Amino acid sequence: MSDTMREKLFYAPKNAYTRIDEQTRRAIHNFAEGYKAFLDKSKTERDAVMSVTELAEAHGFVPYGREMKLSAGDRVYTINRNKSILLAVIGKQPMTNGVNILAAHIDAPRLDLKPMPLCEDKKELVYLKTHYYGGIKKYQWTAIPLELRGVVALAGGGVVNVSIGADAGDPVFTITDLLPHLAKQQMSKTLDEGVTGENLRVLIGSIPDTQEEGSDAAKFAILKLLYEKYGITEQDFLSAELSIVPNFPTRDVGLDRSLIGGYGHDDRCCAYPAVQALFDLPTPQKTAVCILADKEEIGSVGATGMQSEYFDNFLASLCGGSDALRECYEHSACLSADVTNAYDPLYGDVCEAQNSSYANYGVCLMKYTGSHGKSGSNDAEAEFIGCLRGIFDEAKVIWQMAELGRVDAGGGGTVAGYMARRNISTIDIGVPVLSMHAPFEVISKLDLYMAQRAMRAFCAMDE
Ligand code: MN
Ligand code: MN
Image (cartoon, rainbow, N blue to C red; front, side, top):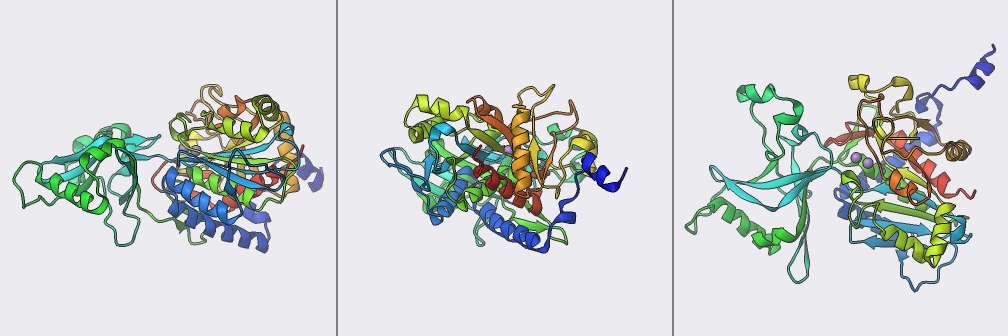
């Protein structure tokens, strides 16, 4: 067989750097710079909503109101409870022809403060008690710098924004770990049991108050500091959403600077390209919608998660009624934009190499996720994938197809199933991640850029 016949018949994914030009390399680099700045500002879903709002307004998006008469080319956004944001670019065709939807999430695994978090232990060490959010390996959260972010809602109204650790002059916090000298028993435990959930207690102070008599003198001193800075009392923690997140800045990884290390790539590395795809979209045939949802890491629950009807209400409002909404959904398509696992040679045995995603091989489509025989997955229909292949190839998107891991090695899910349940053709697509859900995750700049190219081409789709 000739070489061209071999090329025609075989499918052999390649490292994308072997087939891009200098101009694309520059575009990849530039796109990553914007993303790094975004990621540093977006450590919680609330932060991400604020960063996206700022970017969206700079690109001509205005807050949506039900009274608006929208026409092709209009750009609107709406915010759900400060934790989720939806954006739309109105298309030339009626909503009942269907819309193209990008769905990503902006929450990430972290440590949330308990409702009554403050405690003083022997001898005058003061802590914040936490309850972890999402799937974490608990041992990864000890002995690293941490910061505190979130809001305190006051009784009777008013919200105090809290951020300690992000500014250069701020103190940071940490969770201590046991010295190896005395860790004989701990080291014989499993990784899951070596650090317990209750031991994820954040050290925040150690000087007892010397002015007044009484117990918990060091906790009292910390409460005084919090009161001075934020005007809050211990009771105010009852109505707060405060999270402990890693304090690492986003950095280039590798001598060739091909990778980006940072906290919360999952799933801001899909959320950012999704909104960027809308920002530079010329007036499309079909309306393009992007939802950045909250609560994916704990099952897409709650009023701000992908299962919430907030999404349907917004779309119904754009459609002008619930019958039109059903017709709209039937003709709509969705990219569930969420990260996948990049093949890691250090742990290659959990993957099946031929069907794994690889860093620098392009944005990754996942026909299905789930576990134990695809259970809990969306399993996109072949026709939809065929259609996307054509669109991506035409737009010169470099992409790969993969599954999450070796059969029965484990599994996971995304928002895809909740979109598909609405009778919307849906497939997972995302950036491969190394060390997913760790405090410092790693992605490839090339894959990030290709995610934006893919989502941009999808939004312009009119079939
Ligand atoms: Mn995710
Ligand atoms: Mn995740």
